[in-house]
Length: 167
Image 1 (tube, rainbow, N blue to C red):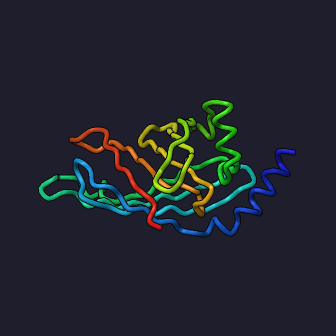
Image 2: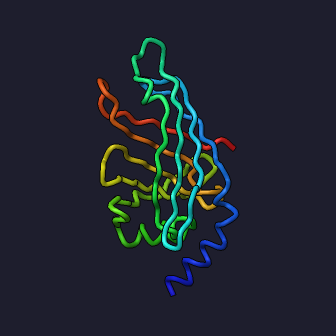
């Protein structure tokens, strides 16, 4: 039965997978702006890879090394998270581990016009970065209307940037 559900989800989400969604970064302590794109780059029977590319524009006179001004992360998620059902199940069952990464449901929040967005946190085994995502079924591709990306930046330590969907 689970295989059948996965197959249906793959079929229904195939069109959405190729869509690129764009986010604009909010200004932060070390940066004035930035952009982020999200695209599902591969779908398998049990999971999918979402590629997250970012570019950050540091504030004047802030010595952010060039390798931290742009980058790419791959978030591997169970295929169930291409629909709201997966997020509802995560909310009911509690934190889970997928390919060494911990995925946790942090509650429902209203994000702009998107009411009851699922707030989840993904922490890969390496802990080099952490990703918080707010999922809403009305958003294409991954459904992520807002992201918070936290990474380790030399000199400054852990640094978190927030991005919002550009409609």
